[in-house]
Length: 336
Image 1: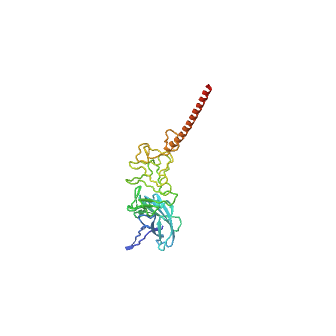
Image 2: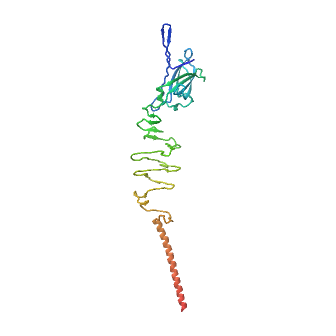
Image 3: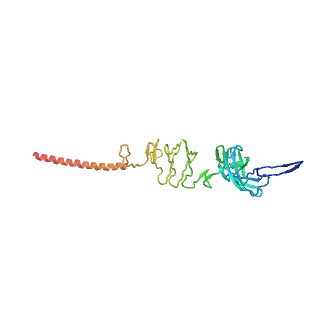
């Protein structure tokens, strides 16, 4: 059976009629582009392949199948890949685990932070797929650097993750200007998408002073709310302004639907003393019902119309008086 060794040390010592041969097998793990900010998604594996006689398999195409297993040497298969490589003159091959040809699972999905992991090695010395198992070795401290350590930019604590940086975090930008700065790469997708399938808050914004939510937009809608039922916007203010809108042109507010106000509404006044308190003139279109508001302009128009009707009525009365006088005069003449 072939032996797969990462480093082999031979030590010969003669003592009486005995020869001692010391064979030490060591798995060497090094990391590619290792940085705490961006943990590498691969690690190096170096091996020396020998035949049954202990000779190096030089310049030999070999196929290795590497598997990451959980908990035990024969535990759940988390990931598996193959590497078709050629040994050098010393029978050595250098592999990057995680960058082979995947046959099961995803390397980046392995959760290195919890549980014990084993590396199982299988080989076909002819480069085929008739793999022979060479056993499994537990992965210890070094490969676990594949997840961010406690002093890295991203820290994992149980099911939670937080940024360990003291500055800003940018997504889609290399120069973030806020604690979280998100820039979308196209117009088809939202820069930030939040969905809550529960019955409470989709987004909760809390501040002790100034603006809890500041929306700046150079296009159409600074804030657009679409809702199927309930409240599109629900604002509770303990003091100050629930909504404060400053608008240079266009509409400061546009409502297409029914508005409900439980308190007083002031237009032109900050202290409305009635359900609707208008400090200024009101223009209304043709109030026909008794409860509608009649503006001065509308009343003046009605007054002109009424004056015309009254004038017509006075003229008619005057004509009736004149006719009556004529009839009376004729009667008097007939009586003579």
